[in-house]
Length: 180
Image (cartoon, rainbow, N blue to C red; front, side, top):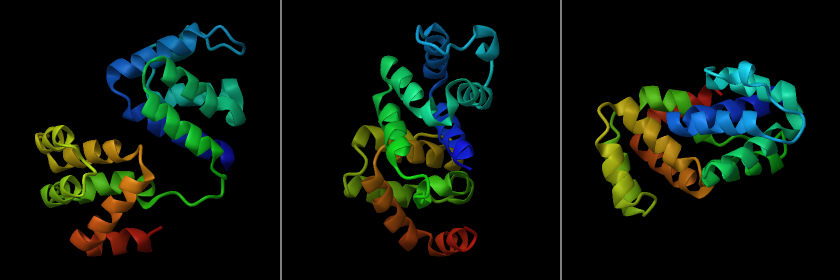
């Protein structure tokens, strides 16, 4: 089970990178000098799931998150690198945060995003720039995806979001908690 968990954490992190940062990540992965090394043919032009698979099989479950964090730091993705380091150091049996556990369902099912954004801005979880950027997204799903990616770096911000969600979308939260 542990291996699947690290692979899932890595895959989620890679999926959330911008296309440019994902390409930089893959480039730095194949350019690594330390052994074991990843051959370009195994990851070139491949998606995040394949890259995560290749990394787990190359670096082992135990080391994959620290290798990924090192590469992320090297390409300037320090928030993502920090998340991986935290995930690596947390006990494998620890409970995943509601926001992370229900990431996809929240994107699909939260349709009224603006009142949540307003409260997050008011509570200083979001800065005006992020608030405006998220509000300008074309669909509720795009808004939620961007919001959740923004929240990933901070467990405290996830907690505030969760509290808001419990008030704004009580039935959704009860449904998701009942299905976990």
